[in-house]
Image (tube, rainbow, N blue to C red; front, side):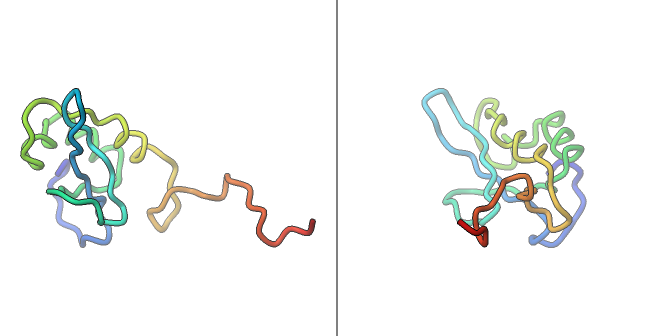
Length: 99
């Protein structure tokens, strides 16, 4: 959507528009399970910025008005590992620790 480059679906982040009281809100759908029309975007801050600048979300998702992209911006700008998933190493795990 942002950079218009082609890529396999496994490398792209699916985005859906959720209707709220004040309009539409964009939500990331990494599991590709949310209902409704979806659009794909590279999970890259530069591609996200380009999509915002071009106002591509409204056209791709067929929504009127300017959708709120706050939750999507947080997801895209979150630190990631090489697998494309958010970095979970910062969260301490209690699994395997002696009590």
